[in-house]
Image (cartoon, rainbow, N blue to C red; front, top):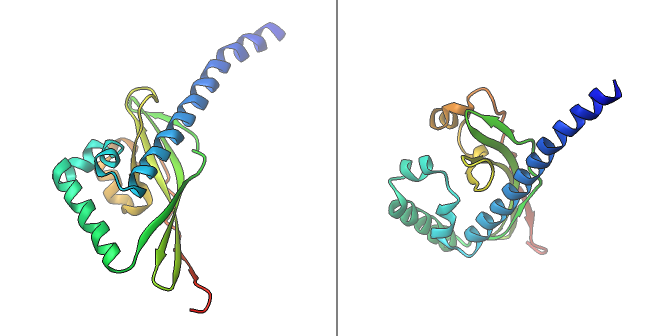
Length: 173
């Protein structure tokens, strides 16, 4: 019995180590993606976007133009992304040859009269056993649309609903 337990344990340790390494890489890649959004470095941000999202937006050039336009509109309204915090990834699962996991993200935005904090989750997808990760703001896309874009995950990943943003007014406002 002891030998069987040790054999099972020896078989499971590499699997746990692999999952831990994949989670650590996912977090590092999500932090690079967040940094690209803050700078902003649209080319770098798009590198961390899933190809289906890029293609759905009309390709890299159109996505870049859309991102630039959105950031300019935000700036014109007095809105700026100040900080992006990436949390600890949840369980990484293998789904149809992909490694998939959710990772919490919090955006802190300066808005007229205060700051706005928005919590959400990124869907991390790796098609190369966790070496490279791309992300989708999973809470920002309706479930039906997300499952239409990524039918591989339909019914297999439960994305938490996006929380309502929290407004913190500036003192004296």
